[in-house]
Length: 325
Ligand code: HEM
Ligand SMILES: *[C@@H]1O[C@H](CO)[C@@H](O)[C@H](O)[C@H]1NC(C)=O
Ligand SMILES: *[C@@H]1O[C@H](CO)[C@@H](O)[C@H](O)[C@H]1NC(C)=O
Ligand SMILES: *[C@@H]1O[C@H](CO)[C@@H](O)[C@H](O)[C@H]1NC(C)=O
Ligand SMILES: *[C@@H]1O[C@H](CO)[C@@H](O)[C@H](O)[C@H]1NC(C)=O
Ligand SMILES: *[C@@H]1O[C@H](CO)[C@@H](O)[C@H](O)[C@H]1NC(C)=O
Image (cartoon, rainbow, N blue to C red; front, side):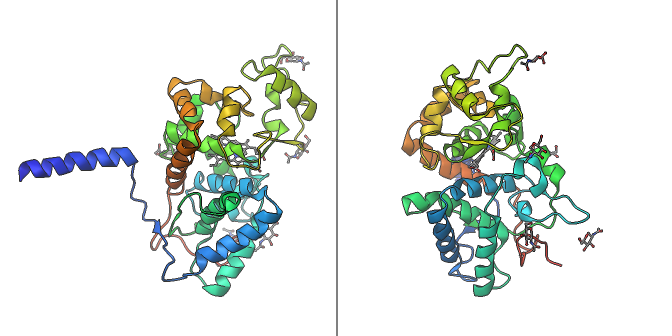
């Protein structure tokens, strides 16, 4: 009896460690009874828009990341600033977010079908999945739901929690660890940079006068740096965007890692993933599509569970851009 119990304990610990599980209070198909059509409504509207504007996939994936890293995945990123509060949206990293209009359209449809039921936080999580999945015509990962919406959104907290493009490996690891995400999550989720664009001023320090000798960042491929200088004309260019994964910037694939290995990662935070042995090992594994997709499923599930509000906490916002009165 005792040994059976011991075996069970060993198994439980091993299994727990293996899947890095966590009890978040979220579950699959949370709205199955309360709003059975919710996930279909969201997918229909998201797919309609992504068909016309494929760049939206990157917007929603990044929106989900920025939401989860600030006060957890609670749709605080959607709240508008007011006369007496500067909200996350007005923080520099969030200025280039987009797709809020589509989120509002989804929410309006959900309120019509099932009033006061589906949270804006879950809409973001599902919009990220569905927009990225559009090109595959099937869900690329499953999304747990049951998040509730927060009531607080502060510009200063966005700056304090979202990692910056000039971060080195140690500071990236620190920011992720603070959200209970590990080095593997960091490398795998950075693979999101396989789609979308980056503004010149987030990386042009790497192109011009990197160390004060009129030089470029030596860790950036010189040919690629020369190309980027033709796109970003000055250090302060904050209007030009370039694809982060040139050639396949709309396609969710492993090219991010292939570019990274060629020293063509756009940001210092991308290049930083090559500065640590364990991280490089994970990068090498992510060159394989099956490995990357499998790992991404796990890591984005973990990201989607950061500091979530569930049960009676938070609220179900009626409009995603304002807290309920
Ligand atoms: C590891 C730390 C990270 C840093 C420092 C970082 C930084 C950045 C920066 C500076 C941009 C350019 C934004 C712009 O110019 O508009 C960007 C774009 C993007 N990021 Fe990240 N990011 C990180 C991790 C992530 C994660 C974890 C995800 C999602 C899982 C993500 C998804 C995206 C996407 C999809 C874009 C393209 C956005 C667009 O096309 O508008 N990033 N990131
Ligand atoms: C929130 O701000 C956006 C953009 O400024 C605006 O279009 C929207 O109407 C605002 N939401 C509300 C509920 O006022
Ligand atoms: C903040 O401003 C809003 C209107 O923009 C108002 O409804 C609210 O009472 C104000 N809150 C505080 C704490 O002043
Ligand atoms: C994250 O940082 C905050 C503020 O610095 C701290 O209170 C919290 O304990 C940290 N959490 C983890 C898991 O490191
Ligand atoms: C490069 O940086 C150094 C040190 O900050 C500065 O003295 C120099 O003028 C800069 N050169 C150019 C071309 O901006
Ligand atoms: C871009 O730079 C200009 C001039 O430095 C500044 O006025 C403007 O606010 C910046 N825009 C953004 C979106 O950062």
